[in-house]
Image (cartoon, rainbow, N blue to C red; front, side, top):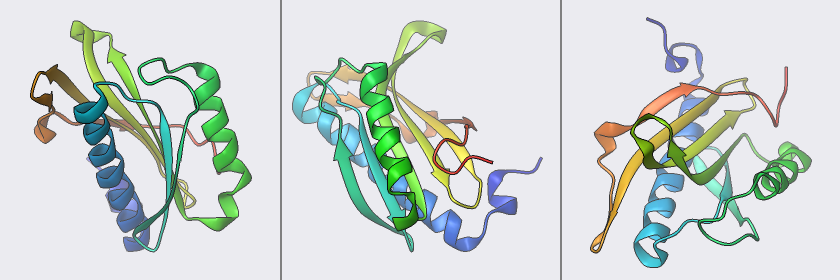
Length: 144
């Protein structure tokens, strides 16, 4: 079975890996400190995360407007980076589980959505990386 890595350049793989690692780390950190997560966006180029923007909404109160604002900003600045990601706190319908959702897109045409289910405990979020769920995403910043 072919995966996105089979067709992606090494540079695209490095950009998307850096974004995913950074977004998940930032999300888990926010959940541990604030017990809530406001949506945020990050960009990457050359395998390095280069910028980040937070939504202005309340943590835990993600709205379609918050996400649309982040995506609009990414589209407007797309010439300055190679890859983008938007992270948000969501509830998965199966089992009603909380998860961090990271939507990733690279200018080469790769689009992914990764979910990391978690349980919020007194000691912080429990989010085993082996529980990652990845699916094909939609191209928003660099449409076909």
